[in-house]
Image (cartoon, rainbow, N blue to C red; front, side, top):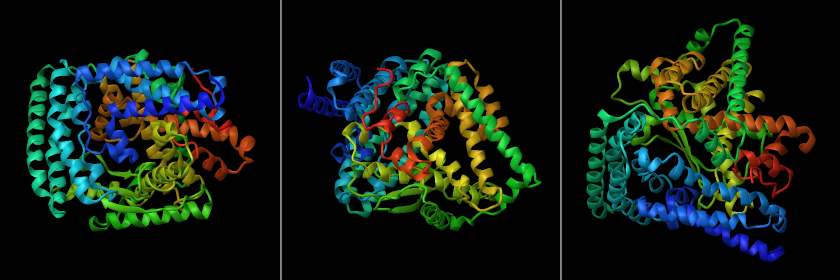
Length: 546
C-alpha cells in the first residue's frame, strides 16, 4: 500500500488499537473525556483477558505490516506509539502478571471520582454512570478472588486493604451527592451490593496476610522491559542509575551552596519556612492565591503560551483520598467538553491532635504550597493539559499519556520557575524546589534498586532518610510505594529528558527562545520520551526500537 491507501488503512488500524485498549481500560477513556465509556467496568476474567491478548497480537501484526516508507512522515512515529499502547497492557498481563499477584489491579480501579468532580453532563446522567459502576463491582472483585494466586506480595496486600477500607466512605460521598440531586433512591441498592462485595474481597485479603511474602521485585530483565513498553526506552538500567545519582549529587551540591551563600543551616531555614504557613481555615484560599500568582508569573516572564479557556477551581481533597494525597490536579481530558481543572489541597483533619495539625500546616507552608502549585497547575500539569486539548494531534497522540512526559514536565517546571526568579530573591523557593527534587531523585534510585538490583526494603528506607532528608515514617512510605509502583522513576526520568533536549536543541532548533521550545514540546501531546527528539525534528519523527 502507498499514499492515500496506506493512510486510510493506518487510520483504521489506529482506531482499532485505541478501541481495543479502551476495552481493557475503560477508565482511561473516561479520564480522557470519552464519556461513552462512563460506568463501564472491565471484564477481567481469565477468558476475557485471554481474548484481549489474542486480539492485541493480531493488531500488533497489522501494525508491523505497514511499510514505513509508504506512510506519511506524520504517521511514522504514531505507528511506534500504537505499538506501545498495546505492548504496555500485554506486559502487565503476561510478564508482570498483575492480575494473578496484585489485588490493587481490581480494587484500586474502583472510583466514582470522574463523575463527581466535573459538570460535564447533567447530574442525573453522572449518577447513572456511578450506579452502573457500582453494579459492576461484584463481578470485578469475584474475578479477582478467582485469579489471585497466593502467596501475594505483602506491600500489594497492605495497600489493597487500605484502599478497600476507604471505599465505603467514597461510596457514601457519592450517595450524598446523589441525594442532593434527587437520585438517592436509585443509588442505595447498588451501593449496598458493591460494599458487600468489597467487604468479601477485603476479608479474603486479610486471610492472605499470614501467607504474604516480601517478594515484589520485577527483576532486572522485566524492569528493563518496563522502560521500553512505557517510554520506548532501550537505555540500559546501569545508565539510568548513573543519571539518577548524578542528578542527586547536582541537587545536593546546589543546596549546600545556597546554605553557604545565605549563611544558614538547612534546619534553621526549614524551621523558618515552616513558621510561615496559612491557618487551617486559610489553606484553600491560600492555594487560590498561589494559582493566581503562578499564572501571573508565567505570563509576565513569557515562559510558555497559555491557551484560551483557563478555568481552575480549588477545592479540598475529597475525604476518601486524603490519606494518599497532599495536593493533586484533576485536569480535563483532551476530549472533555469542558476545560475546567480541579486543584485539590488536603486540609487539616479536625480529628487530629493539636501537634498533628500544626505539623501538617508547617508542611504546607506558603513556600512549599507555591512550589506544589507550580507543579500541579501553572506552568505544570494543568497548563500542559490545556496545550494537549488545543493541539491538532492524531488520535494516538491524544490518547497516549506518557507518565515520564507528564510528571517530568511538571517537575521540570519547578526548576524552570526558580531559574526565572519565582519566589523572590531569598533562598526559600529554591530550597523547596530542591527538596522535592531530592525526593524524586531518590524515587528513581529506589525503583532501580528495589526492582533491578535486589535491594531489601530497608536499604530504600535509608536512602530516603539520608538523601531526601525524610523522617522515618514518610521514608518508609516512600520505600513501600516503590515496591508496587516502580514507575515513580518517571518524575526524574522525564525531567532529565526535557533538560537534555533543552541543552541540545534550544540554540540550534529554537534560536535560544525558551518559550518557542516549551510551546513546541507541549504541542507534541504527551508521547513516550523516546520519541521526543524525533518528533521535534518533524511531526512524524522516526520509530526508535522498531
